[in-house]
Length: 110
Image (cartoon, rainbow, N blue to C red; front, top):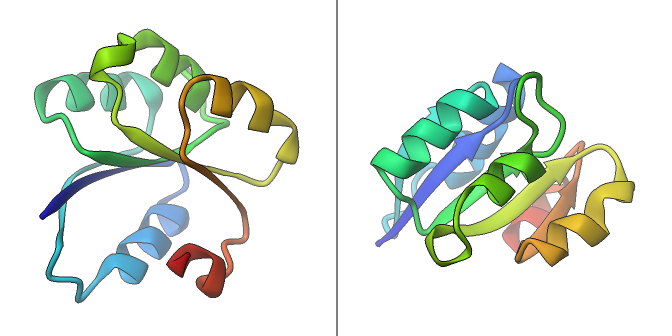
């Protein structure tokens, strides 16, 4: 069972990830977070194996959130954004994938 957290300030984006994960027996969503500070606290309390993480959020963006976690405590991360320009920093922080919004179903399945 893979433990997943979803972090995005847009409710529809969080719901989109949730709907794509629905019905999978090998997935357990540990939390959904609408901002960076809440996510940082939640990821520390209930560490997931994987996080779907929006890059641009108010307060603490997704890349700063990853950087705030010690490397050995960082979950695998799939970044979600409408902007390709964050990819270099995302991969430097150990992101395993980078999905551009709007998310394509076939690309999500990959």
